[in-house]
Image 1: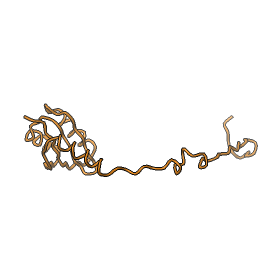
Image 2: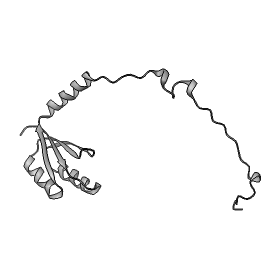
Image 3: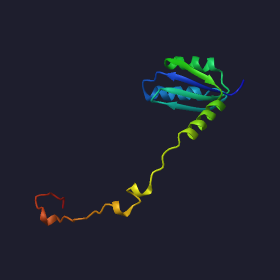
Image 4: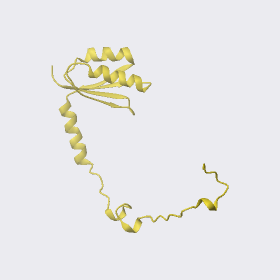
Length: 124
């Protein structure tokens, strides 16, 4: 068997089902890494795993769809290309409020004495 990257779409209804699914996937032999994207409800597994056995176990917990199967090396190369194509804009340090003394806030402390407010109850 060769190393594969498997993407599954799960219909998870609560946190407990997610934990059971993660535990179930991690218990398979050959699993190197597992990651879950809760926004898209996708589970990504990397390793030398039996796909049919893993999907069969997950279908006992929740509805499972197989999205893609591929090599993990290709996905790492795609990520590197995306990073090179879309460099993030660098922020100027002049506009940041935490590093510039002109934008620092000044706080004044005005102590309030107990004698000024006799209606407030203080346990003696």
